[in-house]
Length: 320
Image 1 (cartoon, rainbow, N blue to C red):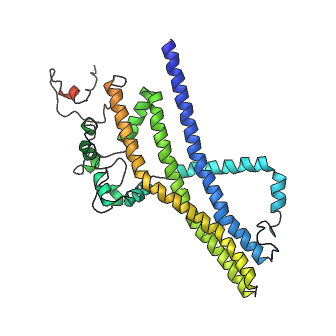
Image 2: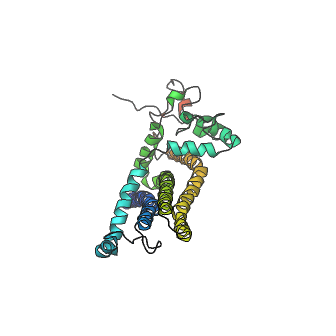
Image 3: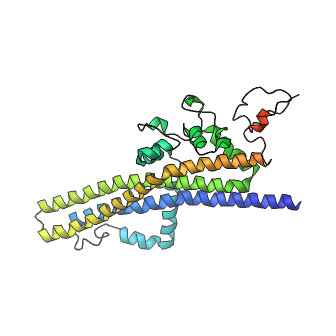
């Protein structure tokens, strides 16, 4: 009974930790997007309206915006914060569901040719259709690194690309979770890192575009001021406000670049951890049939043939 209670406690902790990781992986990109949206788009609009309405102080972005200051005061800091976090979480949840294919493709494109040839998605010329998880050349990649006990679980190669399927990895994750929830926590963290990087990449790309639009809005306002006959020093003072969307866009571009330089490595590490953990659970007897139905036995085995067991293949249970 004590062991059963301890196992239940570990499962509860694993599910709770998974929830926290999933929650933060959705909230953080949403907060980044909301902050970037304000800096790169809303502030340029406010600044432009201030300039065109002859605001006495171009530094006061709330000037000449009817009801804005009063609304912020009336709503209150607490309610405004809750609303900000709620909207951010919704946006982050939507972004976190976007496909990582595009990010992985951009990440592989950042690799040198030598690194690309040595990786699991090796190819001479970058092909978007071939940079898909799990990677086509994963079997050769594992063999070259002396991980033949893992490569024997991979059924697809360059010659048989149609056998590659994401269901193989997803099924292993489900079986690991059912067999050992506490062990699954490591995989959950890896997946959360991948999702967070992927979501942040999409946020960075969006803010880049918004910062360009925001900069153009301010430039248009400056052009209208010039046509109105504004003084040069006034235009120069207002032009300094371009720093806000430009700096925001540059900051998000740098973050996007660093994500692209590491994302493919994260995806490769994720699949290696899944395969290694599944193999260990099979080897230790915790989940002896974890690969059942996912890989085919090498040859029909006779009653005295132990080859299948030696290779890690478990025969189907007998049916009456």
